[in-house]
Image (cartoon, rainbow, N blue to C red; front, side, top):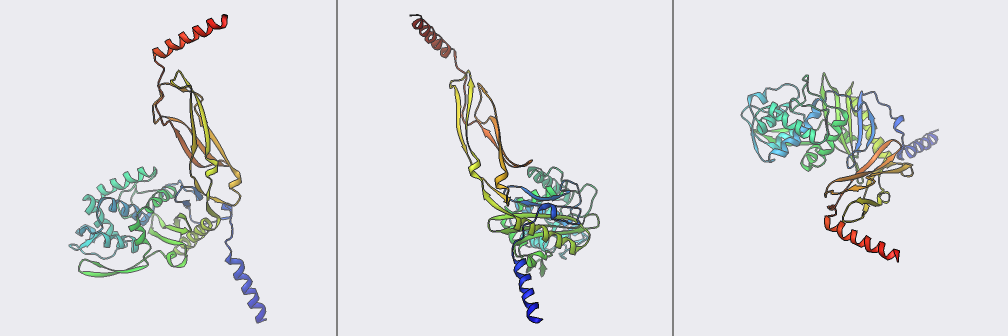
Length: 380
């Protein structure tokens, strides 16, 4: 009987050691909103209510960290105000009058989700949280996060503080361009000097320890937002961002986030589809110095695909049927897009790379004379 149990156990281990391919329709989660996005292309690998506006609690601090680094140096000394030291919610415990490096405050912000650190950073950059929130909103818009509005740097509930899972994924993809933030988020624990004391900080993201492909993330909780999380996972050259919003419990938040990360990592891989982007265009030029605009278009394209999708790719080319002169360099001639079913997985604009002039009066005169002589010769 013992031998049988050992054999059964071995079979179980072997079966579950393989990467199981899962259909997105088979991924079931109870959290009200979630998304999995591949970072380099922005392709959505899974989504549930990804465009619904929600409160996002301390995942707000991803934007806080980016705006801080955009505007300051990590070694800047920040003096903590009474206002920052007195903020409620999760805190590191910094004191009014403390002078702390921005780097140390970012560790407190990202690892222990210190609201006091968030306010200290905002006041250092902009004077007030309100002014700092303006910078956050400006950056959100540049990233395409159109359904996002920040009113503070820490994510505590206010009436107009909201985001969507989709927007938060776009924002998180931008975080991957900040190596300092990635290093901080990937730290499990640290002792760091803050003012006159040394603080022990532990990362609130338990997936950093329990899931080998997780390289960082940010958790959050408020009564209005419930449990939230953003995580970053990397396998080989593929990086994915996972967002889960509104989970009922901490365990659900982490388990469903892991399920979604595993789905993205195990089901998709980056595939070179450059062969599909090999086009020749030939557009007639009306009353131009040249009769036709010709060009070869090639691009290197790598996208995340799951099994069977490569064979489903088809391309749509929408190009002007004729170019009317004058037309100047930089004008859009059309676009080329790649689809799988109804999903657009890639699109590029075809941009005119030269100036196309109208023919001048001399051109029509000389060609008119030429045509007359050609006609006379034909009569003979």
